[in-house]
Length: 306
Image (cartoon, rainbow, N blue to C red; front, side):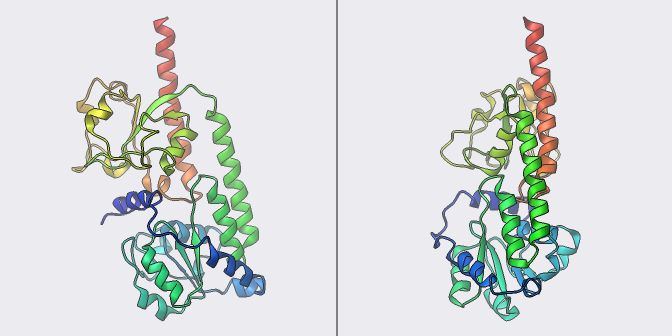
């Protein structure tokens, strides 16, 4: 499965209740255990990180060298590609994980197979969970990772920088005129974003108005005709699904759409926007600027029509 499709699948899993797990009981137990460990002991913990965003955040706070195993598609920073693989989004290699004897397993609550996570806990492994739901949760995740790895100062630094940047983006676009934005998460069949979806929150942060925002699911499938009649002013089409891709949609064949007429089809980097890490906001800033350029164009058109 391609890295892009994996990231789409992972995002969709955020909205799916796979199996109800106890409310962070393992996390609470681990935090309690951490209180009796010295900073040096925490920094020596051997960690298995079961998602790309966890790996990336651990490296950001200086704990990357503690990782002894991870899942497919953990590729940032580049050195992460050398980490031993112990599974993917569909299945974890339980025996291999047990053989590695990790001090700590950091799992993605809605992005790893629930039955495999239960097995890890039954084998007595120390499992804690990453569970970001809101954009601001990236900062909370950094603080949590800093606490369990003895990197509190670095984690707090990056968490504060992230929140400052998030608040700046929010204040910049909070009161801007809404603009219609359609996000093509997947092309065949067409899947978009809605409700509490990670990418829907990014659209809202930029002051965009998603015509499917109130759909029943966070990642609903929609028909092409449903999209065309909304006349989106902006189309967001992540890079691997640009019109040059055989799996992508060539939006330019529908010339009546304002986004096509005025060339407001944007291609953000999904390796950044789909991951719950500090790098995400770098790409969101670019996306917000592109949406705002379109907004100013349409507002200028309105002024001319008066």
